[in-house]
Structures are given as C-alpha cells and as structure tokens.
Length: 325
Image 1 (cartoon, helix red, strand yellow):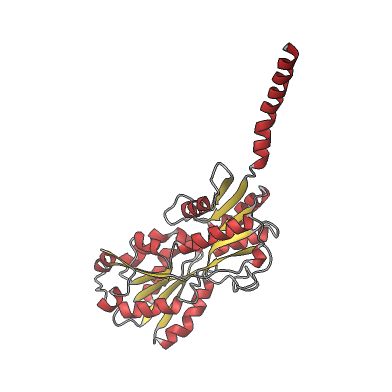
Image 2 (image 1 turned 30 degrees about the horizontal axis):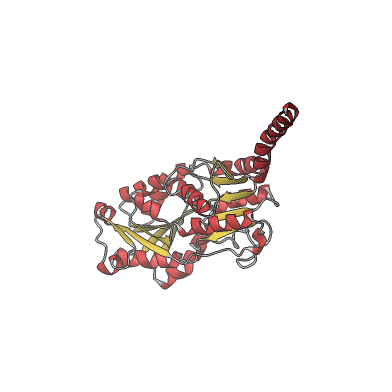
C-alpha cells in the first residue's frame, strides 16, 4: 500500500510539472508591430480600434497577442531607424499607419508581412504592384485621397464665395500625388492653385505667409504624415489667416478645423484588422487585394466658420455627415 501511494505521488508530481508546460506550448503568442508618426495614445491614432477588432477575432492582448509600438512623435526622418528596430524583433505582422511608414517598413524587410492602414495611392507610391495583386509582403487599405481631391476643391468652391486662388498644402513625404491630382479638377472649376510644399514643421509659418502674399483665399490640406502630426499648428494658422480650409480627415475638425471630406475614419482600421487576422492564420499579403473605402464623411465645424466670418451655405450643410456647433 505504501509503495502504491509513493508511485501515485511521483506520477502526480510529474503531471504537475508537465501540465503548465504543455499549456504554454498550446498557446502561440502572436506578435504585431505598429509604426506611426503619431503616438499610439493620440486621438485618431487607431491603435485602440485595431485592438478592439482583433479582440472580436479572438486575439486578446496579454493572452495570445502582443503589440510593439514605435512612434516618431512627428519626426518623419526617424521612420527608417524605428522600422529597422521593429524588424529586428522578428514580429509576425507589421502595421504602417501612413505611406511613409509603409515605405520605411518595406525598405527594412521583404519577408515580414506588412499591412498599411492609410495610403493615398499605394501603386503610385511604389508600395504594391497593383491593387488587385499587391505582390511581395505588403498589402492594406487605400484612402484614395488623391482621387477625391477634386471633390474637396468642389466643396471648397461651394462653401467659400468668390473663390479664385487656392493654396494646396503638400509634402513629398506622402501627399505629392495630391498636388499633381489637383491640377485638372482645379482647371475645370476655374481655380488657380498655389503650391505650399512643406518639408518640416518649422516651415508652416513661412508657407502660409507666402500663400497669402500670392493672393490665396482658401486652403486644401493634402494630409501627409507631416501634416497629420502637426494638425493644431495648421488649423491655427488657417484660422489666424482667415482661410477657409478643407482637410482630409475628421480629426482635423476635432482640432478646430473648418471642413473635412474623406474616407470614413473607422473603416480602415476594421478592414486592416481583418487582414491582420487572416495573415496570422496563414494568408499571404501578396494574395490579399488592397481594399478601398466604401463610406465617406463630410464633417463641418460651424463654430470654426464663425471665427473666420464665413457662412456655410445650406446646400453644403445638408450634405454633411456631421455638423459641429
């Protein structure tokens, strides 16, 4: 009897040690890296939404998925170094918040899957071979903002009376194509354009002064990574110079901007999260077509209009998805 009890004790001891080990082996921790020019906690950053969507797919942070965040905090020049930092961690999937971030990650790795959340024209930017067949290790969601820049000019002309010359704020780091795409619709609308190319945050003040001196009486913001990281400064300068301005995203309006028109802000994160889930289950980015928006939003800030002495026409207000009073 004593010998039987001793054997049972030994077996129980062995099982006790084996159980946790086997359990740990059964749960594979998925690892995801996030590269952005904005802080992960910043409003409109999207990281919370992607985590929430992945939770719905069964990926719970701290249980079977872990995230690594890297942000340039507005300093676009540091993207390559941070991209290399993430790649060195040998993560399962990498998320790029913008075209420059996607380009930095693509330059850093040809093997780790990359999903970009917001790219105006990923083909023109050289990120993918085509929307239907991305090729390589990268795919994602295109906001097609370069395509809808004509619609922004049209809305701006409807909103601001006697509009003749429009300044276009753009950067070679993410919104150069929007300056190019503005030319034809501006000509059709009878508008002259003024180029406001900005390469760093300390150039905004000078660019606005030059635009005013050139006779610009409205502004279109391209929405480069640099612009997105310096929204408040841009909005404040537009307000101070009494320039009616249209922006590519609703978070500019949350920061006091006048009007925004662009793809729905939630949809890219939902669709990107779905892509990440498929990749974690074995899908190849090259086989996942780049997705495009199906929902668009027109957001108008009536309070901002009053600050610059502008009355929004009723026909424009009637089409708004949201009006901030």
